Image (tube, rainbow, N blue to C red):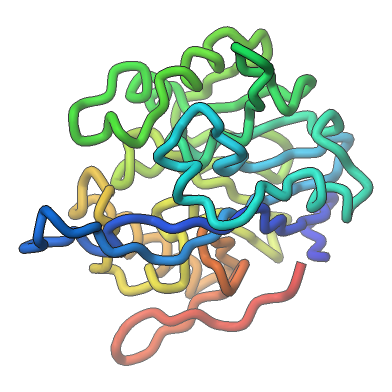
Length: 272
């Protein structure tokens, strides 16, 4: 367990899945052959303190209504098991902070209930960046496969659905940093007490393999912006000893940032 100020921080590894395309855009591939796939994980950040039980992202979930992701999941969705390790169940979550609304981050917010979707976190306020919500409602052709229209509409119907705009303090000691390279209006959640700082890398720095600043993902919408944002974040994290949390790394949940002649590399981080 990691304590930052009044908060206890936990890492929940809830699912493993395969992602098509790898880290870089794939060129000159045979269109008749399957795209290469890499092994990734879904890790949720649980923040408990000050009367709040905050979950960052919801993962893929069962997604029984979306064949693309359900066929790529390689393990069952272990949300209840992971929360149970900390004496919690989904109904205890007070706040659900979405880094962005791509399907692999939000599918776990709903379960199939017959012919409709049922909120998994019935008492949680859902916090999303306004710009990312607008993007999800009217995605362009490039980003449309990353969103699920049904899920976005379900969010719209929730009475506790809330949007914020830009860099914003959500709770004492918890704020969000805006990031636009992966998708417009992605928010990186930061927890800090002035001595220890943890930053959720979302899909800007989703694994340790993304430390090289020029390494971008195939579904980033703006590679140049990703490089600029990563350079700034990694420099800040290196200088101030921040801990980076990885939402998709199958092997490590967190690391610090060290500078080497060839660039930034992962450093040691506490278990939590």
